[in-house]
Length: 220
Image 1 (cartoon, rainbow, N blue to C red):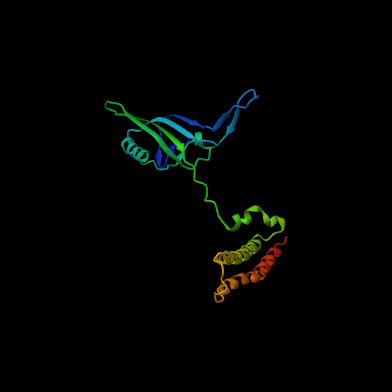
Image 2: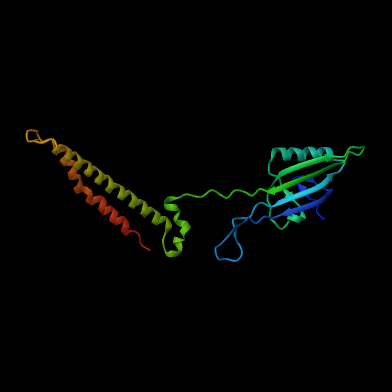
């Protein structure tokens, strides 16, 4: 039978190994339902408990290594028959306890608990418009890359329209303010800069045309 190992340390004198799995159910009481609904939130980390003794020839060195690993809390690799089917990549030593028998032999026994330490999921990839390729647009006959370019053009054209509208509205606000001043017949053409701004409304035709053209490029 293969010897359980923590990194490069062989635990040849293991006397007891126990593996635990907690699925992670939450009980939900439903009105009118006889019994309790169990909602699965996700499996918790696998846990392994070991008890054994260290061989006299290497006990001092092995004990020091295990104590160091337990103190640092770093991930370790663990292999044993009892976890062969669980696909555990890394574990951490949650608890470690050692006892030494007083006497000539000075035998060292230990107890430890290891818990699975799964890798973090990859970071979410953020792309324009939420990642069009992830929505299977290719299967629908769309070129996701070209569609992204078209949508970007639409966004630019829409921005041009909004900028022009904002300028025009600002000019109207200024005209309204001047109107409240009363008689402005003696002022030498004070409205020329403002009328030029209002005249920019006539230039909306170009960005609106560009927006319409960009929208027309979206074809399956």
